[in-house]
Structure formats: structure tokens, C-alpha cells
Amino acid sequence: MGIDRIKYRSWKGGKSSHFRRVYSIILNIFIQKIKSKGILAILIIGLILVHAFPIIFGALFPHEELTPEMLVGSSIILGSYLKNGLLVIFILLLVSLVCSDLISQDLKDKSFVLYFSRPIKTLDYLIGKIGGAIGIISIFTFFPFIFYCLVIIGTQTGDDYSGSFSVFGKTIIVGMLTTFFFVSYGIMISSLTQKKTYAGIGIFMSFFVLTIVGSIFSTFDQNWVFISPINLLFYSYDIIYGIDIPSELNSNIIGILLFCILFIPLVVTYTQIYKKEVGR
Amino acid sequence: MNDIKIKTVNLSKWYSKIIGLNSFQLDISSGITGLVGPNGSGKSTFFKLAIGALKPKTGQIIVLGQNPWMNQKLMSDIGFCPDYDSLSDETTGKEFLELVGGLHGLKGINLKNRIDETSEIVGMKEDLYRKIGGYSKGMRQRIKIAGSILHNPKLLLLDEPLSGADPNVRKSLINLIKSLKNDLGHDIVVSSHVLYEIERMTSKIALIYKGRAIASGEISDIRNLIDEHPHNIIIEGTKLEELAKKLLEKKYTISVGYQENRKKIKVQVSKPDEFFDNITEIITDLNCEVTQMYSLDDNLEAVFNYLVER
Image (cartoon, rainbow over all chains, first blue to last red; front, side, top):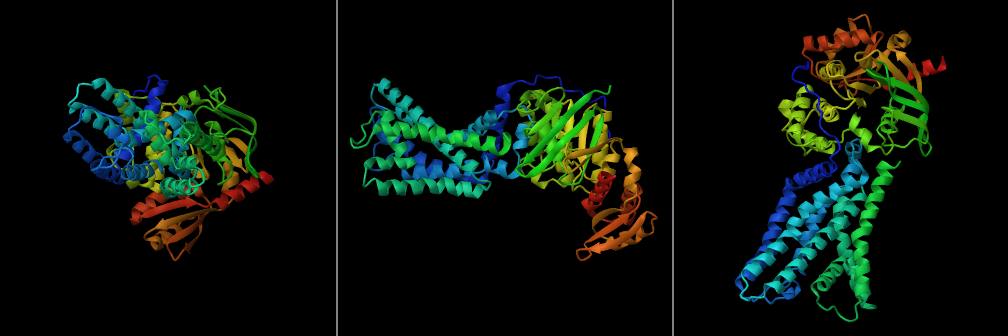
């Protein structure tokens, strides 16, 4: 095999575009995941079962404006849009599929070297992985919420758009919170094992186990319900939308636990990567 | 110009009770340098220290005039091809190269052009759109090498690039590595546990054994010593009986024996260089299908023991 010297021109481009490096990881993760038939199937089925009906019925039913109750309240026909068991199950399935191999596969294949033999820091790697996962999960946990709000606002009969857009803004926060909440947790579980199957099952089951634990202990103290990430997330929705939570529950605990569940997993993941593959 | 590319001073690295490198002293200059040592001798540890993936316990390693530990900027000047396969089977060759290029800050038309160029250099242009899961061992090595030269680094570190490849692939990979230096000007450090493979790429070698650099310099200085020891080679494939008969006719063949229910033959030769020169021709003449051919470590281990004891 010879090389034609005339055709070859050595690359003289810049080597310091930081964002581009992180973006290439995000893009790679996104492309890999969106090509997965399992993820695509969950996304399509979930979008139809969980999001399509509330959006269609929401648009058809007469309404004056977009209210928090339409999102987190319980309607007779469809139940609650955001506090919906089916929604949670589909999110968990999706997060299990998307996040389970994000770190575990690199641990197993030793493919960290693919990243860290390039001008990439541990934090860049982590941001890239999280960004790619957020890109996929937000298709289910962010954009449909936004679309729902826009449809409701577009078909409202009343004139109070400021109230509707206030709820719309809060829904953007809810969507971002929901996406980051699950991705942060999922990526942590993925960093704790080299087997993606364990990580996937771990993500799915840990939510249910914690929910059961919460329901058992809440008979002693109501605040134990927050040990369940799902309950924690649902009560966070209430606080964001300005809906009163039961007086026996302590809203400070929600804040503290929410902070912990959003950021401690990231610290754990960073430490795992650093300890196992970088800082040896 | 014979400037120092990698310099180590009393470099040591150990993992709990296992020693990776032990007071390792070696200067690597420009050109192609071969690192030869049995499996577990510390070659991969040396490469990981050179790319900053490991932190030295004691001593120092300087690569291109800089300390590689936590030095991401230096990685722009280094191309590393690891010994293990960390490629995702679901990714296409093009997607892999796009990711690698992106990690080096390449984008747009620059990236596209570089992917075209490097895939042509490694002979993978036609297979870029295939999934890596469908690649042969040789193709996987080629795409890894393409990934390591994509950003046109000053220094290439190739850890066991020939391992597991069949004879024809080995030959073409050796030619590729030589052309990366001769035609494109890359300085290369390449490792192998087979001296005769390294010999075909360069005359400059360093021998590594049990975490120490026991000798370095021109290959001819130690070659005679090594040739005194019989060399064992395993060949796996079809028409092995005919191949064995043909090999036994050669003066350099000491013995040929079957292994694993006649699925493999073990060839013991006195002059490995002649064997490696002739084997491709013999395989082609007999129309054998050789799936794997590799040298046994124990032979090299014996040579190293011999060298250390001298």
C-alpha cells in the first residue's frame, strides 16, 4: 500500500475549539442512541400513548387559558398529564435504555482511552455524555410538555395570555428539571457497574424500591414519601406551579433532597471516572 | 535531526503489589522506535504514562518536552492507538473518525477532508460506511490507526498494532507504519512482543522486560543473540498438513507439531527472519487459508531471561 504524497496535505487547522470537542461527544451519543431500535420504539409508543392523547383532548376541550391544574391536576378523562404513572414508566424505560451503557460500556471496553488520549478533560467527557443523554430524553420529557402548552395556548378561548405564558415558563422549568433529574440519576447508576444490563435494571428497579420504602415509612412520618424520587419530583412540580402541598409535608426537605438527587449523582459519577480511569 | 521525543528518568509505576515499570530509563528519538517485550513486560504501562492516562509513582516522563500528566493540550500532538479494541460495534468507521476528529476540534470540510485522506492512507476508504462490528481484525486495526493520525500528530504511539492480524494483514500494516514515517514524516513508537515484526519496521529498538528497559539501540547488536534461540510460531487455518510438509522441507524449520485436534500447528524455527520472509509465499502457493499466526511469548521470555542473566 503506497501513499500518494501529492494528494496528502497535512492538516493545519486550529486545535483548541473547546465547545466543538464536547459537542462531538454529545452528537455521537445522540446519533448512536437515536439509531437504536429499542429506544426508537419506546419513544414512538410513549409519545403516542402518553403525550398524543392529552395534547389532542386538551386542544379539543374548551378552555379559557393554560392553568397549572391542566398539567398537574387530575382530569376525569385522562388523569393528570405530568403526574402520570404511565409517563413515569416510559421515562424510566427510556432512561434505562439510554443511560445504562453511557459509562458502564466505557468501563467495560476501557474506551476511556478513546477520549482521554485526546485533548479532553474528565469534565468535558461527562458533560458530553450527559448532553447526549439529555438530547434523547428531552424528546420525551421536555419538548412534548412545551408542545402541549403551545397547543393549549393556541386553542384557548380567553384573552389572558400572560397567565398562560406564566404557566408555559414554569413548564419549561419542569421539563428541564424532569430531564436532568432522570439523566443525572441514570448516569450515576451506569458509572457504578461495568454491566449495562445491571445498570439498566438498577435504574428501573431502584425507583420502584424507593417508592415502596417511602410508602412503608410514610405511615410513621409523611415526609418519608420524599424518599421516593417519583414523589419528590411530583411535589417539586406543585411547588414550581405554586400549588400548595399538604401542610404535614416539609417543603424544605423537598429542596434539600432535590438538590442532592440532582447534583450528588454527578459528583459520584465524576469521582468514579476519575478514580477508575483517570487519576490512577 | 535526532532530537529526543520521549525521555524517562527513573520512571516507576506500580498497581498495589504489581509492578508496571521499575526505574525505567529510556530516551526515544525521532524516527520509528520499536518497543519489544513479552506480554506483561510494561509496554502498555509505558504508553499509558506517555499519554498521561497514568500518573508515575516515582520518576519522570517527558513527552515532546512536556509532562503528559493532566496535560490535555499535549494530546493534540500525540496520536495513540491502544492495544485493546475499544471500538463500538454499532458505529460505522466514518462515525468513529468523526468523533475522533471532533475530539480534536476538527469540523466541517476540514474534518471531511481529513477523514477522506486518512481513510485512504490506511486503505479503508471503501469500508467507511460499514459498521465496525462487521470489520475484520486487520480493518479494526487500520481504522484505529486512522483515528490516531487524523489530527496529524507529531508523535504516533502504536501499542501492539499487529496483534491478532493474519500474515497478509501484518505485512500491509508493517508497510503502512513504515510509510507513515517515510512518506508522512510521523515519529512513531510501536510496540510488539515479536522482535521480527519490529525488525521489519525499524532498526531502532528498546527491549523491555519485567518493567525495565534492558537494552536499546540498533537491532543488529542483539539480533545474533536472539537467533541462537529457537523461535516458536503457532499457525491456525486450513490445509495445515500440506503447510507442515512444506515447512519441514525448509532448512530453518526444526520441528512442526499439531495442536488442538489438528486445528493448529506449532512450528519451531532456527532462523525466524527467513521463516517470516517465506511464509506468505508458501501460504499463497498452497492456497491455504491462515486465520491466525503468532509467536509464542515463552520463546521471547527465554531470550529476555538470557539477556538479563548475561
